[in-house]
Structures are given as structure tokens and as C-alpha cells.
Length: 267
Ligand SMILES: NC(=O)c1ccc[n+]([C@@H]2O[C@H](COP(=O)([O-])OP(=O)(O)OC[C@H]3O[C@@H](n4cnc5c(N)ncnc54)[C@H](OP(=O)(O)O)[C@@H]3O)[C@@H](O)[C@H]2O)c1
Image 1 (cartoon, rainbow, N blue to C red):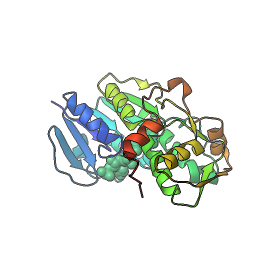
Image 2: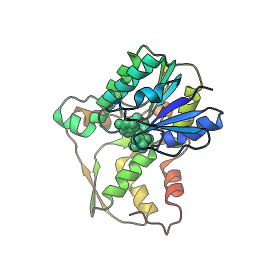
Image 3: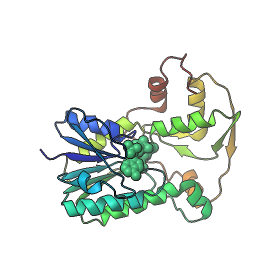
Image 4: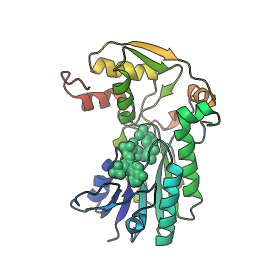
């Protein structure tokens, strides 16, 4: 059986994709920058998509590639390195995870780039996939609950917590995204598929209040007005996908699961 390569198979999303593929009877190969012990049905290959190191070995014999490796910057180059190697190796399906709003949030000014360069980098990476000559599928998801938890944990350390005025978000469970990604991976290349968003839209202040409530804290919340076109697009809802609110888990569900007992206060 040919392995399915999952880049980023150690990350928030990828580590939920990997067991789902294995449970579906697939052999899975995970690319990571650190070496790891193989598990049942899971092989690890060390490599770096930013430098290209180890990529040839990772793609060898993998007809299907799920590309989840990413960071806040430089996904275009990472994707290009992967695509080049995958094309040489004759891959027949490349599945890419992008973000809702990649095509609608303009990143032009210095402020846009500094605060929201991620969206431009995801759009550029999407274009690399589309132009790769490989059969492809792209799923755009809204931001995962885990992302907001990281933000909430960091900002709640401050006595006064800034939130972006007028911004709304539609957080989605990484597990819902993993389920959809696996379904797409096991299907035929489908091009750009329907977005996937969480079941509810929240203001940034609401998300933070939910976290403060779950962790029994009180903080002053201070709205901050962000300049720039990318921020304006956010205020207009370009990062939302109300027609595809298909995620099953709310922010409150996630907080209850993740933070567990009320006695647990994250640091
Ligand atoms: N988080 C969100 O809210 C969100 C929303 C929509 C879309 N997405 C997209 O979903 C994907 C996964 O996001 P995530 O939140 O799961 O990310 P994450 O938790 O930060 O994990 C990043 C993963 O990428 C791998 N990686 C990073 N740089 C790499 C490199 N140079 N070479 C090889 N592997 C590298 C890491 O592997 P090692 O550290 O083991 O090398 C890790 O497995 C990304 O493309 C992201 O843009 C995320």
C-alpha cells in the first residue's frame, strides 16, 4: 500500500488528520522537522519544507499528499518546495488547507502586512497549488478554537485586554476540519471546495469573555481600532463564512472540553 504523506502531521490539525487516515486503513507518512518514533501504521520522515531538506524522501512513493505544514509566514515557499518535489515524484492528489478570507482580505499596506500577512501568504500558497499541474483539492477553514485559546491565554495575562473593534470570528473545531480534510483526501481531487466554518459567529470581545468566564477571571476589555484595508475587510466579515457554518462544536463546547474542571486555571 502506498503511504499518504501528511506534512504538518504533528501540528494541531495534522495530528487529528493522521489517526483518522490510519483508522480508515491507510498507511501514513508524517513529515516533521524533528525525528520521531514510528507508530503503528505511521512512519515519520524528517524534513523541512522551508529549506527543501528531506522532501524528496518524504514524497517518494506517496501518491496522495495532505499539506498541513504551515506557520504565520512563508507558506508560499514551503508549498513551492513541496509541490516541486511532489511533481517530480508523480503525486496524483495534493490536498491543501487554507483559510477563509484568503481571497477577500487585501494585504497591501505595511499595517496590512504586519497584522494580516498570513492571509496573503495563504493565498499565494493556494496559487502555487493551483498552478502546480498536480490534481488538487483546497479547503478553506476559519480559524481553529485552539488559535483563539492561545490568543486568550496570552492576552488575559494583561490587566487590560485589547480586542480588535468591530472584528467577528467564526471559530471551528480542528477535529471538524480534520474530518472534512480526510474525507476530501480519500476522494477524487475536487479543486476549491466549500468553506468550513464554525457553528457560531462571535465578536472578539465575546470570545475573550467566554475564556475569562471559563477560567473565573475578570479583566477590563478595551476595543482597539485597527487601521488598514485588511482590518476594514475583517470588520465587513470577509473572514466569515456564514453559509458554511458546518462545524459542530462551539467555542463554549471547546472551552468546557479543554479547560475541564473549573478548578483548572491555565497559566
Ligand atoms: N490554526 C488555525 O486557526 C488555522 C485556520 C485555518 C487554516 N489553518 C492552516 O492549517 C494548517 C495547520 O495549522 P495548525 O494550526 O495545525 O499548525 P500548527 O499547530 O502550528 O502546526 C504546524 C505544523 O507545521 C509543521 N511545520 C511548520 N513549519 C515546517 C517546516 N518548515 N517544515 C516541515 N514542517 C513544518 C510543524 O511540524 P514540526 O514542528 O513537527 O516540524 C507542525 O506539524 C496551516 O497551513 C494553517 O495555515 C490553520
